[in-house]
Structure formats: C-alpha cells, structure tokens
Length: 229
Image 1 (cartoon, rainbow, N blue to C red):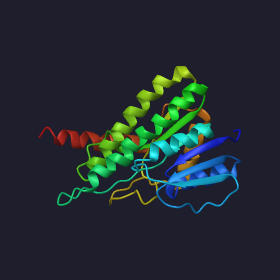
Image 2: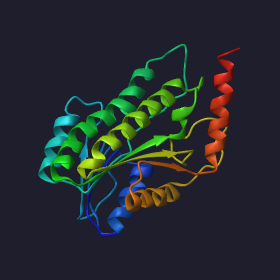
Image 3: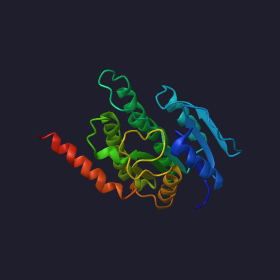
C-alpha cells in the first residue's frame, strides 16, 4: 500500500486513534478532527479540535480539505447511550453525531473527490443497523440510517472514480461497547486490521467479525417477532 494523505474524523481515542497511529507508522500524512485534543505528536500529523455537532464543523472541514485534498477520509465519530425513559436528552445528540455528522462530512468531502475523480471515504457503522434494540433504539436507528445512506451514496459515486465503504463492526473494545451481552469482542488493533483490508480492497460493505452476522440476524428476528405479539 502506497502511503498517502488521510483525514480521520473522531480520532482522539478508540478505533480512530488506533488507525491514526498505524497510518502514521506506515508513512501517511494525517489530519485529525475530534472533540478532544489529541495525544498524537508527529511531524506528519495535524489536529483540529471540533465536534461534528458544531455549527462551524462543515466550513472548517471543507476549507481544510479543499486546501489539502486527501486520498482517504474515515468517519469514526460515534456515540451510544442506553435508553433512559425518565430523561431522553441524549437521544437527539446520538442522531446528530452518528448520522447527521456523517452527512456533513460527506457533503464536504465527496464533491471534492468527485471533481478530482479519485478518493476513498470509509464510514464506521455497526451491525446494530439491522436490529430493533429496545435498550438503545437511537443507536441502532442512527446506524441503520448511516448504513443505508452511505451504501446508496457509494453506488452513486462509483462511476465517478470515487469509492465509499460502509464498515459494520460488531463489538469492539472501546468506551462505546455497553451492555452485559458483548459476544466476540475484538480489539482496536484487530479492527484496524480490518480497516486496512477495506483500504486495499475498497468494498461497498464490509462486516466483521463474520461470526457475528448470524448472531445479529437472530437477535433482529427475535425482536421483530415481538412486535407482532
């Protein structure tokens, strides 16, 4: 893989940080964007502290991207909270970060990539995108919108020489992983390994680990049956 330039959105911790460090180790130049300051210090790294909810996020991202067009842009930002029916203040924020933040990012990045007729956008979704989840409905619904939008967009830009990949992970060992049932948990290092396969192969959809696919389908079917009872 030839090193290039990447923009990583949501990289102060978790998968985003692990990916940033590995790309730098492989000779890439990185621009990072996150709500917290970065712990990364490297000559090939620059960082902007900003949240995807910020009113200025689109203008900041667009201005930087137009000056330094990247080969790769990865949207890692995401939040998830368990549903609290006595206080639902976090519900709107989950959609703003998980779904609307993605829309903002692609709206800034994709037109430039299409103009250049090159580039790869990767979005980190979740296998929860096909589950009715009574304990976290906002998370699964926002990821359902995320996956549907990104994969539809991938088909639209493919003839323009641009690639989009929707990555659907199961449980990854980060602060995002919540709940008492977390089967087949993978490390951030393993998740980054999967991301590098996506960078090389550029599929529209990539799900990992494969062993989680039947588990998710079973859970999804069980909860959908409950809606009929």
